[in-house]
Amino acid sequence: MSSELTRTYRPFSDSRPYTRWWWFYDDIRAVDIRTQLRWVRDQGFGGVEIAFMYPQPGSGEGPHWLSEAWTDLVAFAKEEADRLGIGCDFTFSTSWPFGGSIVPEEDAGQVFGGPATQRLEKSWELSYFGRGRILNHLDTGAFSRYAEQVGGALKPALRGTTSGMFSDSWEVFPEGLWSAHLDPVFRDRFGYDLEPFKACIDQHPDVRYDYRKILSDAAIEGFFRPYAEVCHRLGAVSRVQCHGAPTDLLAAFALVDVPESEALLFETFFSAIPGSAAALGSRPVVTCETFTCIYGYAPWPAPSPHHGEEKVEDMKLMADAVFANGVNHIVWHGMPYNAPGGNNTFYATTHVGPGSGFAGRLPAFNAYMAEASDFVKQGRTYTDVAVYLPLEDHWMCHTLPEERRGPAANYYWELQTVERPGALLGYHPLWISTPFLEEAEVEDGRVRYGEAVFSVLYVDVEWLDGEALSALQRLAREGAHIVIPRRPAAPGHRPPADYEDRLKQLMSQPAVTTDPGEALRHPPLVSGLDTPEFWCREVDGDYHLYFAHPDTKRIRYPMAYEGWRSTGLVEREVVLHVNSRERTVRLAFEPEDAMLVRVSATGAVDVEPGRVDE
Image 1 (tube, rainbow, N blue to C red):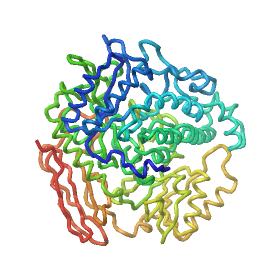
Image 2: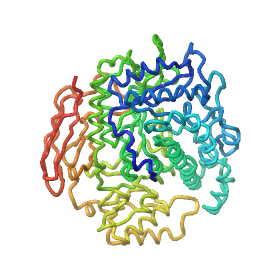
Image 3: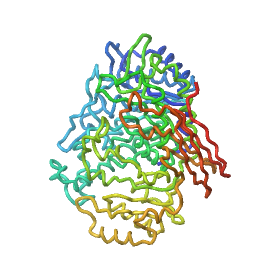
Image 4: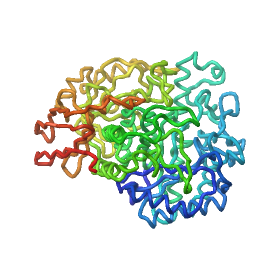
């Protein structure tokens, strides 16, 4: 999962926030690029990510997608960013998902019945080409041909400092998603033909599970792995929002150089999935597309509620919430390109620009986020209890009940409703899944994968795949401490015949128990009544604990615009169990404060409020 590039370069090592920079199809001019990049730098941003989007009303003629004139513009933007000392990333597509005029029919997306009907919306090419085909994201060859054209056009812009190549959320229509080359793969793996079930697959959850298992592997091998490899060949790093893909998100996020989360169309606790993947994959940076539609969502082209009037106090709590769930670098969503006097805006975003209602507070707010980001970026994520990600449970289900759906959450398999077990939160639990368990080692009863070491493996699921069972059996035989509170069943149309016998053998191992209290013999890292959300990093023998304001536990989409934040002092007393020592610490939160707590190897505790200084 690594390369010489990622070993020698730490992407986003400068902790200043980035902003997405919407380039709408138009007559983009060098003078405006220079002016806007200078503004970005002066507001305390560390870089931009250029995203190529649809024409706005009244737009002029722009260069065609991937043309020589287009390449000249993006290369100029990169050169100017380098000159100003800020980063410059590029979206590896126009709009999302990947697609457009360069996708021929044979490389386009497929469903069970043949070619997919989905077309690319909101793209740079909309006015002169129309709605292009969606790329087949399950076919390595199709992606390779697409990447050759996009990468070739971007190559001049990738000179100078290392850029990130960004892939936005998957957003390929999921119903019946398929690729014809997978038919024999399915038959060879499961011993039966999928064809008779395609038209009625939702009537057969056991078959649908097998289908989703194949899709998961196809997404990783057909898209995420080759995407990271292409970025490296181009001299760039891969920055990817893996969510939305029908796959093992932990495995996908751990493959890319910079996993990226999203909030608030995604609830803040979702960030623990890319945060866990980064710990497992030794990825030092986890970015987050932040402040997306925090007060709600209005379908395109209407702007989101309170567009440009977002409150810094609300946005700070939003950022703090994702910091406390594993994120360590903020990407604003986002800033539109505008010529002088222009009024371009992106509808599903917090509006960043000189005309924003909060523009005067941007430098101070960005300075705070850089400080907080740096605090949770140093060292490596503290690990203790590994919690098995309930993929099987969510692959066996289908659509979410109406009350649990949102603009970006419709299916169980999207994992947007999965929260870490509340009873384990003081232990700082991280998610884990089968591919990591299969490669993990056991040392003195602890499970090790790379730099991540876990004292206990917690598996509380209704369904457990045969491959996962095999991995657990091996770990148990080698002495790993495993908690399995309830007896799982085997998913799939043809589960292993010896499944029950093997499960019985697993449960009889001396280090396996159904009682969490029996396995968790040491105290949690943090204990106390109603402890705030937190994330912990180990830094050269010290511990950095980032505590978000208790109000962040109340954040849910959409965030209220008035009257939900605490107005006075909020206090919490927590007990820290570090290096076999117990320390009681009083956390006194002024409105919107976070707390940056350092515990030295000798046990000394330093508490510093995290606030916006203006």
